[in-house]
Image 1: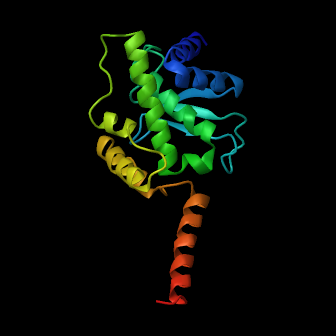
Image 2: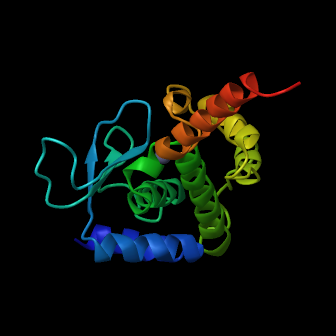
Image 3: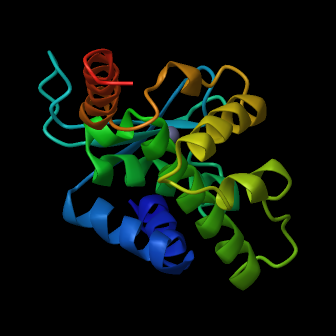
Length: 190
Ligand SMILES: [Zn+2]
């Protein structure tokens, strides 16, 4: 499909993060399709989605906003596909965490602004709260909490507040460690 080829070429022009995402979509034969999505511009489905025998992973763009009529160089659309590809690359456990989200938002921001800079200098760059998101650390609990606030703020209806801060196994380990430390303190000397 010519449209999809054009989209992939545009992704590849969005800096290393976009180039990497475009190669991944080709290598893994990821489908790109449209369907109505509430509260988000795009979503992904991993290949093993329970109960559905999908042979390939998928990236869906919101059909209320995007279609084959949309220019394949629409910077925000290009950046959305890159965001969802980062989630596919992360795997589901990491993707379903604030850390995974923050990584995807940062990749989207970088790719979007790089693409605009190099290909469509008249288009507006992402800024404001996006700049703050781009500067947060993936390894700080305080920053991940701030990221959660900013994401909900930028995208009402976005359910980042339901996600664990770190990928779940790591998050559980963190809480177990804190409980253990508290228990050990109970038995400690003053
Ligand atoms: Zn995401």
